[in-house]
Length: 326
Image 1 (cartoon, one colour):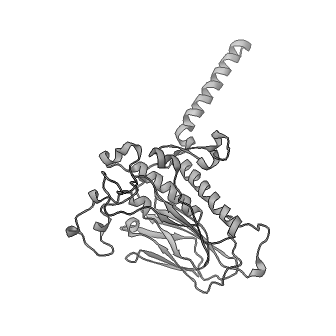
Image 2 (tube, one colour):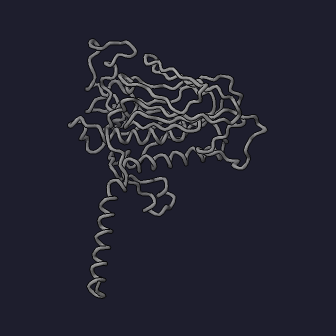
Image 3 (cartoon, one colour):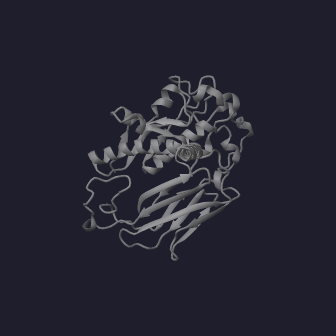
């Protein structure tokens, strides 16, 4: 198998300024002369779209050079000591969680592998990772139980102690796909996700209208024939414990089994027609309690803009009535 590994992928503003908020910038675009206003993004939804577009550009540049090959981003992560280290005092790591979520969604949308930086069992607030002034570990020894108090069963909740932003890090993902992955997106505010994958097709059915593959146009031909039917999706007990897993979108002949102890959702899709696309939506009942609001420019400023426009229209109408009468 051939793959290429991109350079380390970090948001430069967060990396050097150690700050993250509602305002993010497409540094990739600005460095190439993009009009500044087009490079500005607002809110959590904006950060997701911003990061996703930048990673997509990296992936598709690789496709244009090497063809459609598996991609692994060599290293990516977020600084835990951002925003003047406020979270170390308040224990509120919401901004870190928001940034990690935006980055993870960007990676998921591009369907790439990655090395998440980092897990450091010795991390603490004073020395961070104890290397190069970095504090990227989502695990903190200060917040963990001593080994003598831990239970070592695979599903023991105590193993998660010390994790600071686990809801953004521990996410479902397709571990083994009986076909070609086409789309995956997880919403951590509810625990729901969508996954699409397609059956392979013979080389004779290759579509040459788009000779260079894209993230949204992954070719289903030119791959080895898929002989298995079962797809396995990692579904962490961190989000499913005490909740019902609901799977929608399967055909009548398809089936699924959720084994919570193995943290796996098994899907068997029996339609093997070439280029058939399977699409499922998995949700939780009840859904997760959201850790933050997925805001954007219009959700934050839309009502004010509408009110201002209505006010201006009212002033104009009043002025016209004063001049011309009713």
